Amino acid sequence: MTDSPGAELGASAQQRPRRPKQPQRKIIRRIVDGVLLLDKPTGMSSNGALQAARRLLNAAKAGHTGTLDPMASGLLPLTFGEATKFSQMLLDADKTYEAVVQLGVETDSGDAEGAVTATSPVALTQADVEKVLARFRGELAQVPPMYSALKRDGKALYEYAREGIELEREPRRVTIHALDLLDFAGDHFTIRVHCSKGTYIRSLAMDMGTALGCGAHLCALRRTVIGAFDLSEAVTLAQLEALGEGDRDGLLAPVDALVAEYPALTLDADATRALLQGRVLSEPRGESGASVRVYGPTGFLGLGRWQDDGRLAARRLIATAPELLVACG
Image (cartoon, helix red, strand yellow):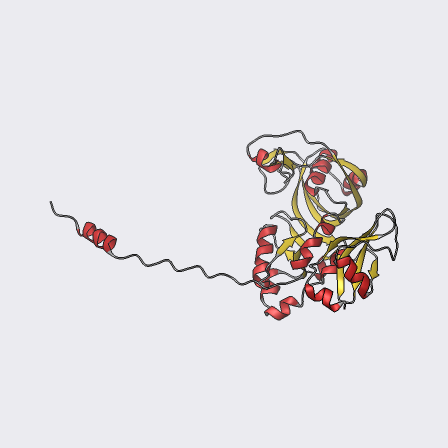
């Protein structure tokens, strides 16, 4: 029996020398320092948005200041370079959201991406909703949703939830500073929520649905404020992509924008040199435990903290590059 043409072709292909693999071209990233206020679109993860912005800026180091679910849109401050050292400041900040709550439908995740678990008729007035909203202002004990990134035994709660496992969760104290009804449309309503860190708007929507007696879930969410940053200052990825590299850099807020809530302290050259070298400063003196923005002749140095004895120690500094010490004499 003779070999088929296909077999001959396969044999000759095996005899051909293999081409050496071409080495992958290494991407050379730039040192970029600053904060980009991004208006994240729906349908994209926070990390996906971060990587897209990082690629457009060609930045060596990048991070974000707290995630938004893919379903959510709005303000997502991104940090680059030295600004990544101060990301925690915004994780701890108050936030404001605009949310649409769908009445009469409950889902396993508490939002529109989950499977429907129950439905109920809705016969509510705007006054009914206003009355219930009043119960959710101030300090609350809120149970985090199972579909969250909180960890239990090293595993995220949402991983248990996807396996059909529901765990008991301890309530956490959160504060709803303001809760306003923006629109009411019979089977859904829109609210503005100004809240403390750690607040889950999905849990708030579910709890309000329970209080109203018909169940509810979160069907849209947009973050508008984090700390001192407002969505009106943010740019979209499309706007960022339409610009040249130099113009993109011009959109970055300086590193110290992340710590603008702290009082500022300017040091002379000698004190700057001492702080950069890790020494504790006897003068000036301040209130024990308080943090302060520290500046020197070269500009922003980082955060300092007053110790119990009133002396100033470094809390978190930007990179102590040799030129900073040289600039101080």
